Length: 266
Image 1 (cartoon, rainbow, N blue to C red):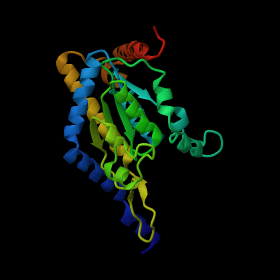
Image 2: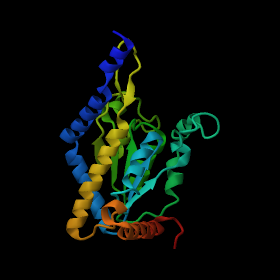
Image 3: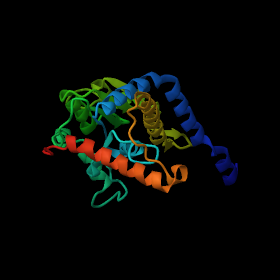
Image 4: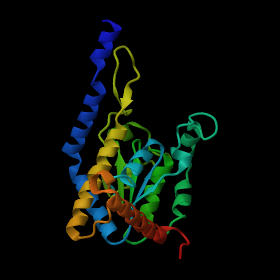
């Protein structure tokens, strides 16, 4: 086969794998997503926050949830740069440090100590592997503080790896609801002939699909209750004046909720 023919034979393989992952989520995870959406709606309607935590590339769904077009206040992304800033790769702020830090026991409690969580708050923890110290201890700490916890993780991938040594558990063992992102073990979804290292991870598209499904279902529940906050919307949809107003209303709402949560704010 010519080089061009080989490339053409591989065309669409990742897209097919991504579609299969999304189909699997739809077929198996909608009940868990609906339960999570109901929890989110209850928290936001009560004036609380849905805290979102992830390390590594699990930072991406945090940013996907809020703030961006089509999103609304009530979701609090908690992204620690030391564990989520990957683009320098080597040297200062390099990948080795980030991977080391997310395995440091006790760090999750230090992070949690920055906040005064409210009775109506909840926590969603994202970790594809679900086996590193910080995400697991974040879930443990959140439950200790009285918050319900949702784990968004890759069940098969997590079970294929060794559990967290200190507890002998995985993230999925410390959650009230588990949402499986249904990715293959190792995340990369496309195998090339003659190559034993697959390429093309699908966890990002899976996480984005899960959080947006939660976002939409939660919005519907809040709208039905008359409790939906301002939705950040492009000026191309609602005009410049209303778009600006929605942005300001959303940011002010987020600031009010966060002020109640920041430690020592009162």
